[in-house]
Image 1: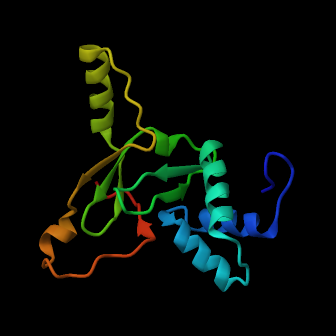
Image 2 (image 1 turned 180 degrees about the horizontal axis):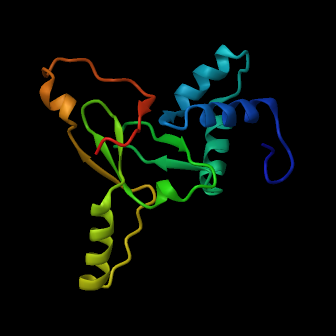
Length: 154
């Protein structure tokens, strides 16, 4: 898919293809750089970050701003507004991101609007906690590396 200004490069297309192929995962710029190196491309990290920021600005990817000292992750959403309509949950132990896509969100929106006159903006919003798998795992269990599954599990 060409850029909006009509200019496209092989590297940009590889980045976009990787994001589209991994749309069920949130991936970091480091994941993308590793993939590009495996494909024989060697862009600078700055090139990857700039393109990810552009895609986020266009609304084609969701950018999840990570905790201090951790890297941001990105998820391809295309033209779909679906991922912008609910909050996300992030496990502080393994880093997994879950979609909070259920009827509860409608209740929260209605309550905030009716009782507080507040319109909830969900895009990029994240709630932090510990997932059930990590709560059951021993404290010395290894963390799950990115990319992380973002399937509906909440």
